[in-house]
Amino acid sequence: MRQEFLHRTKLKAPVNVTWEVTARCNLHCRHCLSADIGEFSEAELGFEECRALLDTLKQMEVFQVNFGGGEPFMRGDFLDLLRYAHEQGITTCVSTNGTLLTDAIVSKLREMDLLYLQVSLDGATASTNDVMRGPGTHGRIIEAVTLLHRHCVPHVSINTVVTRANFREIGDLHVLSTRLGAKTRFSRFRPSGNGKKTWDELRLDGLQLAELSRFLSAHPDIVTGDSFFSITAFDRRELGLNMCGAARMTCSVLPDGGVYPCAFLHDRRFLAGKVLTESLQSIWDNAPVFELLRNIRVDACGSCWRFSICHGGCPAVAYFLTDALDRPDPECVASFRRALQSAPAADQAYQSP
Amino acid sequence: MIDPRDRLDYMDNLSYHLHPLVRGRNESFGLLFYNTRDTKLTFVRCGNLLRIGPAAGGISMLEFHCGREAERGMVRRVLQGLTQKGLIVETGVSP
Image (cartoon, rainbow over all chains, first blue to last red):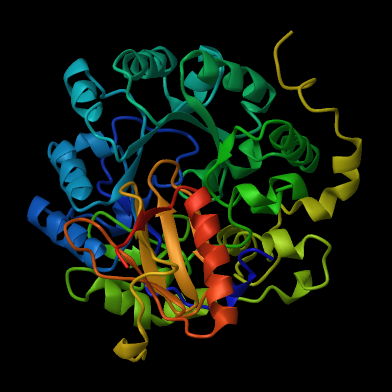
């Protein structure tokens, strides 16, 4: 398959680095996967330390930095950080809740050609979204996306973590995003951060995952950023990775410079090193925990009909739900194939009448 | 390591450089391209036959290390595909 050889090849550097630049946030979302990063990453790299890390990323030929948090715009120097990254030729992808975007900030974002912006929205309606993200946030998020559109900021997407709470609105979310001039992006709900506490309440059941798989097949314009390959249908296999990219294509940096294999494995056990005491290149090349991730083989999936498009799925989900990295992704579509075959036709079940 | 004497700077009297909106790097399997226009990656398994040279004046030229005709044929096909994808740009060179 297309990326099969990546299983046997170690890239000389990550393709992209997910960097949670702050643990501070003005919202307290019920499903936030980063809600507990402040517990083991209390300090925050200063501006000069951030610049030094960006210099290193340029030297390593990292193509893209995914900035997140916390809420990255809580940092007063965040626009300067973005500008500096772009000066190094690094593309940035910013995940924001949108509530801190002002006319002045957006007019500066407009000038950034290498910027991709994801604004989080967790429901097409205020009643659905605000339960997840807080009272009044739906209106503020819509205002932010409208502001971005008015300023003609390119590369804007509305990102939704698909949960049981908003599942029936994913069609409406797609319509809403399109109307606001933004792409639709769906993220996977994960049992990390606050997601550990709300997992049983908010996770999709097998039938819903199967329906989501069908819905995504019917809408190839919808972007799925992170490890949806556990439910990827064959017709979407060219649209993204077909295996876990942790320590192979990506790694994650926390506010204090701690380095982890990916943004979904922020657990002390997976700390690979700290950029203040060791170079990122050295961590990438030598950290035992990165070797561990690179050598995961989900033997139980080896003979599965879907193996070539998921390679066992997301080890982080397996780890948080089964305490082992090398178990099959518990949300793999193969385990509810029958449900997939009987799922309602795409488009029928996801839009309000 | 490649002997610098085996390096060719052009192919069929053409040279190629990365599109200004495209980043690329050398990897053990060949080349890895990143398109800033859509953030998509392109993996090219060409070993050392094709390498990205150091950037000069903001432009990175492609270097060829193929002597045999079979290798040159393979590289031609790769170049054609990359040009069609808008990842590299073809420029003429004086003979």
